[in-house]
Image (cartoon, rainbow, N blue to C red):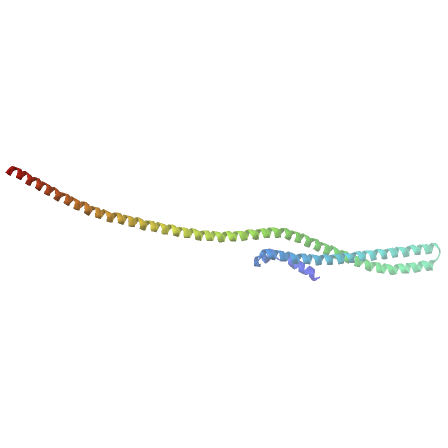
Length: 227
């Protein structure tokens, strides 16, 4: 049956390899399990049909065996009644039914083997689906963590760029502060030169005044002597 072949192909495949190729692993997981559950429904249907075939074969086998027993019983009754011809007819019928019984026995054995195989495949598929269902939660959890990590990496990169911008800003601020300090120092130096000239001028101005004052004092003293 094609469904069983496909089932074997599916279960022998590597789900992780399929997910690695998927653009969206979470969606791939859901789709994978939807397909698998669909296959499971088909396997269940096939299994139910084969189990029904086995029950029918067993029922026909039992009915045939009952017919054999029945013919043998009637043959014995005919002999007890002294009717060998009747007994012979019952035994002939018994032999015919026994031939059919042998065929039905083989059919029942095959049907039982088919049922056993299908039940094993069905049970394995059920267990595998349950296992993958539990793995789906785990894989989705991993996918969510991976997405979060990717976002954190992006945020980290942005933060790194922001830190670089802040460092550039700090360097710019230092440069501005240095320029301001240099300008203030230059202004202080310029102011110092002006004060020196003014102080020097005042010095000589003061010196000249003293001489004039002293000269005036001498003149006044000499005038007093002449008087």
